Amino acid sequence: LSWEVTDAASVEIRDESNAVLHTSSMASGDFMLNVQADDTYTLVAINPAANASQELSVTLLKVPVINAFTASQTTDVTPGQDVDFSWDVTGADTITISAGASVLHTSSDAAGTVTLAIPASAVYTLTATNAAGSISRDVDIDVLIVPVITSFDADVVSVPSGGAVTLSWSTQDTVSLQLLDDQGSAPIVIAMQDIASGSIVLRPQVNTTYTL
Image 1: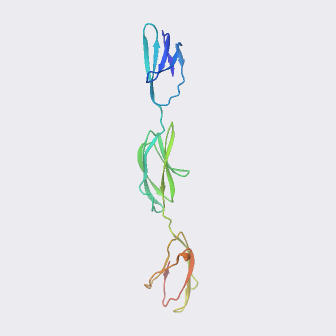
Image 2: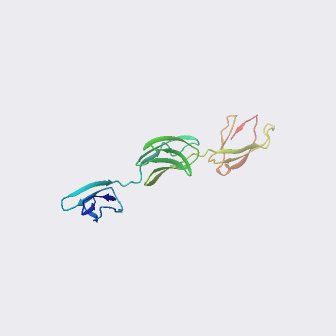
Image 3: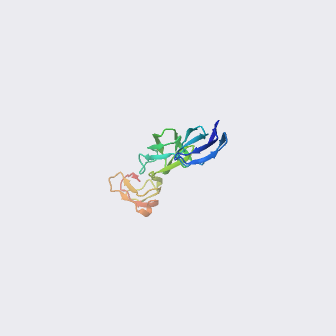
């Protein structure tokens, strides 16, 4: 706090509670103050004839507040699906939404919604920033893993009626597996231990197309 006065025998600096924080006989000067909260300070210039005063309000800049950060869907999201992220903050100059090191959206709006395509499970972070600092909040998005059939082969593609055909396969990220044919037969449910990689011997009686 700085002051400059004339015709004063002394000056006082007081806080909102009227406590005297500093006294000086100098006509001008500075006083360093560690501000912990919003306050109004009063400079009182004193001489035998009268006192004069002037107020100065100091507002402490506060870190932003995140009131809300939500996603329209957080579980069972399919790869590439659009998800709406909404935020409501107080006291922020800017907000960002990021996943890991990638910043996906930036805004100066205190509240808003943005639609993002979700490629994979990740933690999405809202960061609200002003000159006093930053604050963050996370939302976890769980994306369903699509099963992959990496191979599906037959050892032979032409056999006599009732001849043996060995079908073999390999898969990734698969929790259940069935083998179907185009003859209306009941599906063959593959055992759990054979889902990732396995084979089966079949004896078709007629031309048959098998689907894994």
